[in-house]
Image (cartoon, rainbow, N blue to C red; front, side):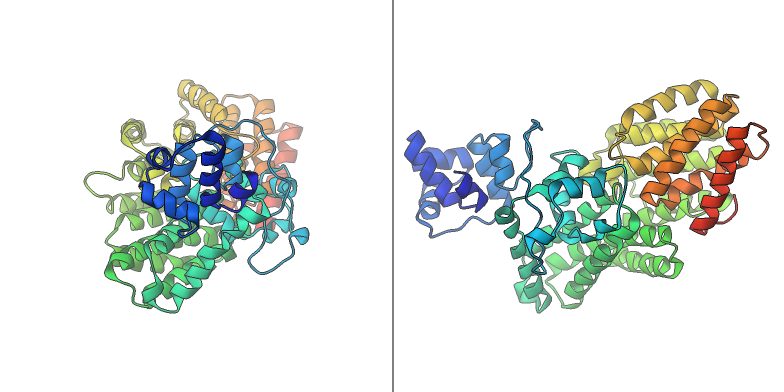
Length: 473
């Protein structure tokens, strides 16, 4: 059975089930949602199963335990602590498996306390697709470990989508539903990887992905595929623009902004522009940042897209609070109402980041700006409770910075320095420009402090900002 699952030979799986469990073809068909005739063809080898949906139906219908699901290349239903295979991901470029990182090495590269340049060795295009397909089943740490730990035989089946994509690039006649779905899943995966990996680790793979999408759109695909390809290209381009800004490449960021605008128009999904302006607001300050968020809101539809709506309302609250405007509190309430209606994992590629913890972080940031001590303490604890210190480094950097600022406002210099140190460490580890910029407010607070630890921290913040090429706080 292990051999059959590893090679994804469903015909062999069915034959074993019939032989050892005494189950008829009809009963197998009922369990997995196939006709008896189709089960017979699969068992004879006349039909090969290649659809992810069918693999899922087979696993569900046969009540496969998690270890069997994982051997088949699917996500487990319940994380049981079963050790993952110690076999590295095979690369599509023919790199020997022995030369690639093991599951433990990838776990350290992607999730561990110290990042490494070796993270570039990970096949990011394949990793993004795997993460995107498993998006709704497991948490991000498990997704990355699953991708790292796939057996060579199971991962070899991933080669087929890329071969099909290559054929599709040569002409519209080869493009099919499955290829489009895989490209959509890969876009989702890139958005999820952005939470975990440094920007430089995924930028090249993301631009390759966008190039492939562009080539397919230019090849003249059928109308039923063209709009979907344009939409996923727009969703990928908004992320590329954000990452290019993070890497201090403003010209490339502006180019991707233009691509996302064209894609939004071509696909008939103007909400893509809402994401573009929301990302842009993080690169601005004061009134300009507020205007960018308000511009983003103009692209929201009257109904639906509630996850994006909750995000934009929270961002507007943050920027209003930074300007001392107490209307920010009402916007937070509206954001919570939108979040209650939202389905972040089903709406847009970029909305996967939004959860209760991120909403708590928005509240914390807003109340810190408003110097609302009671709500700061409540939101701060909720935000801290929501983060995983093993995988949420980018989010943690921002939360630690906000809590540090709040502690300084409350007069607790020791706690403020402690949290600011954590923020600085995590921002440096993830190479997050966003995290370092969030520390600018802490830097301003430290300017008048006489405490030795606070002054040393101020010096380190200034040095880090200069090394990163950021403007003065």
